[in-house]
Structure formats: C-alpha cells, structure tokens
Image 1 (tube, one colour):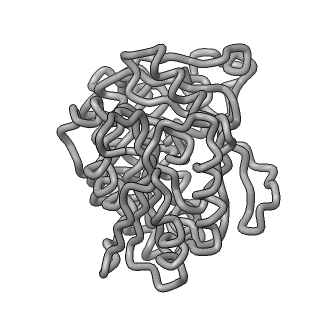
Image 2: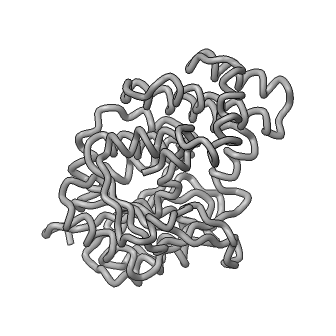
Image 3: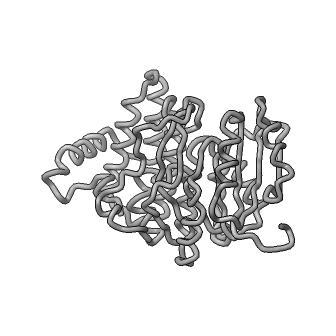
Amino acid sequence: MSDRSIAVSVIVPNYNYARFLRQRIDSILAQTYDDYEIILLDDASSDESVSILNNYRDDARVTHIEVNTENSGSPFSQWLKGITLAKGRYIWIAESDDVALPTFLECAVSALDKNTSASFAFVGSNCIDADNKPLAIDFDHWSSRHKSYEIGHFDGNEYIEHNLYWRNYIYNASGVVFRKAFFDKIVDFSCFSMRYSGDWLFWVEMARVGSVIEIYQKLNIFRQHKNSTTKQSVATGAGIVEDILIVKKIEEYSPQIGAYKRSVRRGSFVKKIGRLKASPMQKKALYESLYSHLGGTIKDYYVERFNKMFSGILPWTITCKRDRL
C-alpha cells in the first residue's frame, strides 16, 4: 500500500475502549468504499486494547499501530499524531467507541470529490448506549428545509458566523471526512492542546480554509456512555472555559458579528453556568472566566431570555435555531 496513493486515511484513536474496539474496526473493514489505510493509535490504555489492536496487525489495510507508553492527556493530541502519519488525501477520525454504516465513506468521499472547495463533509448520526441499544437522541435537529435536500453546501466563514458561533454542530468526529490539503493550510493548532472542546475549534479552523458540506443522511452511530469525554465535560462544566475561549476566537475571526448577537451569546453562557450542578465556588470561577474573556454583564442573560420567550412572535429576535444556515 505504501507504493501507491491512498484516498482515505482512517485514524482510530483509542484509550481504554477495548470493549468497543472490535465492533469499531470491523465497521471500517466493512465499508463499501475500500481505498483506505487504517492507522490504529492507543494512548497508554490499561485494559485489553493493545491486544485487540494487535489482532489486526497482519491486515494489509493497517499501516500503523502506534502505542503510547504514557497517556497524552488529550484526545486531540492523538488526532494530530494520526494526521501526521496519514498518507490519504482525505482523513476520517473514527473514534474507537463509535460505529459506521457500510456506506458512510462512499457517501462522504463522493460529496468531497464533487465539491472541491469543501474542507470537510459530515453526516448525521443515530445514537446507541454502551450495550448497542438505540437511544432516542437527535443531535442533528434537521429542519424540514434541511431534510428536503440531499446535501447542504455552505461558505465556511458564513458557517462559522451562523452555526459554529452558537455550538459545535459537528458534534462527533466519527461522522466527518476532511481534506488533508486543507488541513495543511491551518496556522492555529491550539485546538490540539485542549481537553474537551478541541474538536469544535478544529472545525472552526477547517471552515476558515474551505466550504462545509452537510449530508442529510444518518450514516454514523454515535455511542453515548458515562465514560465519554462529552459526558464528562457536560457533567462537570469543565468544558465551558474552553467553549468561552472558542467563542472569543470566533468573534476575533468574525468582527461583523454585532453587539446584539454577542449579547445573546453571552447570555446563553450565563444560563448554562447557572443550570450546572456545581458548587457556588465553581460557578463563580466560570462566571469570572466568562466576563474576563468575553466581557458582558448579567443583563446579557435577560437579553437571551427575552429572545427565547418572544422569538415566536417577534421575527427580528436572534436565536441559535433561527440563525442556523
């Protein structure tokens, strides 16, 4: 495989997910699109992960099995390691606890091949629990407008301003394929030192260098379980400080975002912090981080609440849902 070009590099970063690894890797090997290499990474797991990874060592599609002797402390540093090793023109970061439908790669690669200005394409996801049971969770929230199209193709900077400013709509890396040549254009790599929200900032940086494709099919399976980084971030509020820094960076990238919209965004942070199941001291620290990095006051909370309450009758109000492309 090293003697020819490769279309897709599939990176599987793993840490203590031995119970999910076989299902994950087998779902990659079952793809209808077969022009890919697999890069298996382990971040010093203490379970049976390395033993399972070694079972795939003789598969010609597996070009690397890299095992860290010490844990890196960040899942995103493993992303960067895998990208550095990748030879494909496209990259798929296939998180080790997720699963893919067989046509995922075929669909995503086809969309990118047809739209050469796009930096990445991502699909929708169904959710399962640790025991593979379906969950009634919908992270896509597609409107009837979205569902009426096969794909959506958006200017990257507009996508940042209207979508990624509010939240990380690209909520699961396993549902994304991105273009390696566009990754090489990124100049800010601070996302890879983050613990919780580095993926959000990564997609912001990628959208700055190319357009964005949304594929309105659920071809990815996103696993929800108590040990996931997403669950830990939400439960403890540990990711909020990183989220604040990302919104600050977006505002630096997008100075056209007006004061009213910024006030609503700050108010959403105040609401989120207030609803956390955290100690008063923890909340105080988060409020201080918010105001020191983004400014604003408690009045922003009331602006956000007003918008939420009256958005149904006042068409000029700004909400996350209304602003979404």
